[in-house]
Length: 202
Image (cartoon, rainbow, N blue to C red):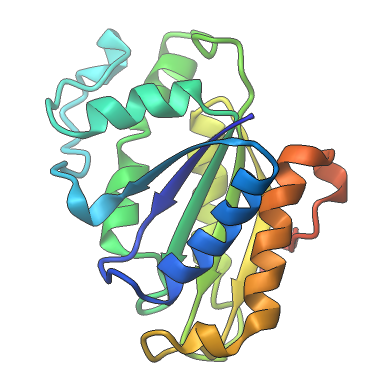
């Protein structure tokens, strides 16, 4: 299995990155193939709604998303790790999501299948400082549509509240162990046995 892992936080070495790294350690222990990308290091634009992909089936913007498009089409699992800012994923993640419009056009405007015949799975890893209700609902709803546009399906994720200060997650070894175990599971076990939250509003 090839895993495309997206680090969606603008903070280097923060809680989200630590969580993602724990997950990826599990993937590598299970001998999974990993490509890890930090969005804040890339140069790319959000969708500009030019409409060109409606008839071309691809995005006309020439930036670092070109490589991410190729990576996604090769992946069996897309993992997006993001903190929650103002009850939403980061703007980097939103720009990444918006650029799936090109895949949506290929699928729904042009009726084209996934170029490699895949049905990728989508997984979320997310943290929020607040303990508020429905904190991850917007992220999940958006990601479901993103995965559908990319010929894939959202399967669930790990979601944690009340983690704020940089590095605070290191005090929660139970969380990091869960992420590590999940990384191993996604390579070695069938999806129905993965220990994830499948609710639309965890």
